Each structure stands twice: as structure tokens, then as C-alpha cells.
Image 1 (cartoon, helix red, strand yellow):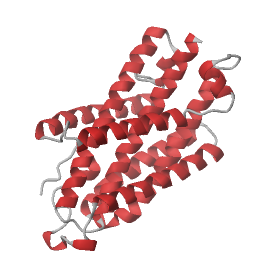
Image 2: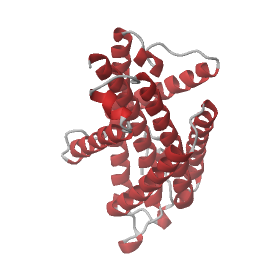
Image 3: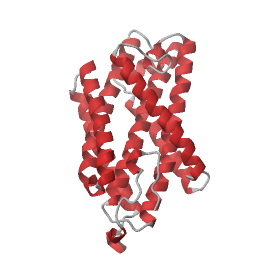
Length: 278
């Protein structure tokens, strides 16, 4: 079996020994993966809502939750590569922490927009001033990306071929290096031009370039799902044991969180641009 993937959570050969392969009710199924993924998404949604409602929006809270989510994601990936049986425990922990980070990030951007739209009327300004949130448009965009990628995969329009995997590997690695560079520079108060969300409130040209970059990264995150769907199908078709459902669900959760993060930033940038037109 070759489980090579650009998603570190699903990138591992021989995740279980041939003797562990099962059949019937003891084997992993697509429905089982869907159920486990839904459970992780539900956990992230609950912790995200709690983080949004009760945690203060400060640089330290955002930084701690961001670092915690990253460390747990990276650490969990390496741990589960060695022992996928722990997925049922590690997966929910990751989902909970990731939910808190995304919830706090959503609250932060909502408050930035509230200040930006103070005194404005109509359009997005009215929505934010009336207690609306970027969570809804970000969720809608995320679901649109998931449904689109699932349709492209199930109809066979796009398949995770070797060439597709190589291209996505390069793009994902580039994206990860960009995130890491931006994070490190941010510690010293330096932002990457156009990539930083601060460009959304800059001149219109910078805002549009930043919007294009955000769309590009959202596209990378979305097409990563094609790789993940392929890994899930391979795991199921190989007769993997039941616990591999949690392993596959964890990998999907990592990608879904990435998609929502980019959709949230896209919603923020669009809100700023629309407010300028009101």
C-alpha cells in the first residue's frame, strides 16, 4: 500500500500491519469516516463557539491558541503515524484546540470590522453593527469548497494522480513555509506585504492583491481535499481496521480547519472591500 499524501496526517506507508486488515463490520468504511469526521467537526464547532463567547480577544490569547493548535496538529500527526490506534483520543483533542483558535480568530476579525464600520450604514456595515459575524459567510464558503471538491472527485473530473500529488505537494509546502515565515516575522512586528490581513485596510490596490492571494491559498486548501478523499478511499478499499476511520477523520479535520481559516480571511477582506463601495 502507498499512502503517500501531501497531508502529513495521511502521509505514511504501512499504517497498520497486514495482519490487522479486517473484513465485514470490523473494517473501516466510508460512512464510518464520515461519522467520525462529523464528530470532530461538532467538537470544533462547540469549542469554537465557547472560545468566541467567553475568551477575551487579546494578542496573547490568540497567540497561545494558535501555537497550541499548531503544536498539537504537528505532534499528533507524528504520534498517529507511529500509532494510528490513538486517533480516537488525539483527534478530538486536536479538534477542540483548533476550534478554540478559529473561534477566537473569528471574534478578533469581527471586532476589527465593528471598529472599521463604526458610524457606517448599509451593506456589511449594517450586518456587523447589528451583531452579525463573519462565521456565517466563512462557513458557507467552506461548505461550498467541500461540496465542489467532493463533486469533482466523485465524478472523476479530478483524481489524485501522481502528477496531481506532486504539484499539490509543492504548493502545500510553499503555503506552509509562507505561514511559518509570516508567523516568525510577526513576532518582531514585521508583516509580509499583501499577505498580512493589515493589507485589507490599506489602499485599494493592496487590498485587491491581498484578496487574490487569499483566494489562491483557499484554492490550495480546497484541492488538498482531493488528496484526502483519495487516501480515505485507499484506506477503506485495503480493508483497514475500524480504528483507521478516526485516523482518516483526523486528516480530513486538518484540511477542513485550513479551509475555514482561509474562508474566514476571505470573508474579512470582502467585507472591507464592500464597505468601501457602500
